[in-house]
Amino acid sequence: MNPRTFLPALVGFTVFVGFWHLATLGNSIGDLPGPWITIVGLIDVARQGLLWKNIVASVFRVAWGFSLAALIGIPLGMAFGWFPRLRNMFNPLIQALRPISPIAWLPFAVIMFGGTAMSSDLSAIFLIFLSAFFPIITSSTSAIASLDVKYVRSAENFGVNGLEFFRRVALPAALPQILTGLRLALGIAWVVVVAAEMLGVETGLGYQVMDSRNALRMDYVSAAMVVIAVIGLLLDTAMARVESTALARRGMAQR
Image (cartoon, rainbow, N blue to C red):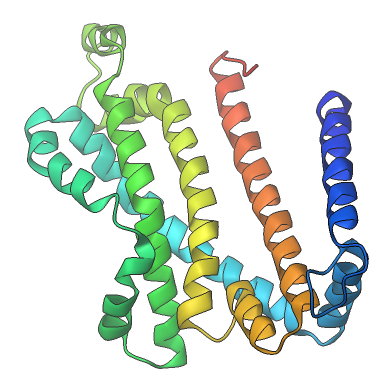
């Protein structure tokens, strides 16, 4: 990591931990845990073997839901962006469904996929898919619809059309905006998996939060929250690196 960005980030985290410590001075495990109590709780959960199991479960669900959303959302978004009639037909439906919270679909997901352990995974993956699908299809549609006309005319002059046009011209030109949509969608998916696991499954970091709260182990709750934050940061950093690499290859630099 670049020292120019790492050092300010380290200062920011240090200030946050300092305020956290001051705000929780004198608190016990049953109250709002401080940083040290949280670290002890994190070590305890890790020793029990629960932490890694829950991390794997959450990441597994996000990987499947997000991947399916990208595989379906990007091609559909590009089609909507390129064909105005298709966009005018389906865009109002997309925009009507997009504001509905994915968690509101949980009762229907349970009905559709049943109540077994595997179907609980499918329910969570379905909710994650919904949460990631709409940002992806919206960004892909916008990226193609706003494609600079000079790219289209240049491709026509060289006889590039059809699928070759999308592969060699449209997708590279739209890639930065599509990647931004993917980055936002991944962050939303990570938030939704935790919420879905708090309501509908018996594994995962969200389940650990609810189960620990019911057991009045607030140190385990805060430990799970720290892990959720760290993984979320790692996912966003990875997507930001992919995004910056794609921009660099096109001769575009981020500030």
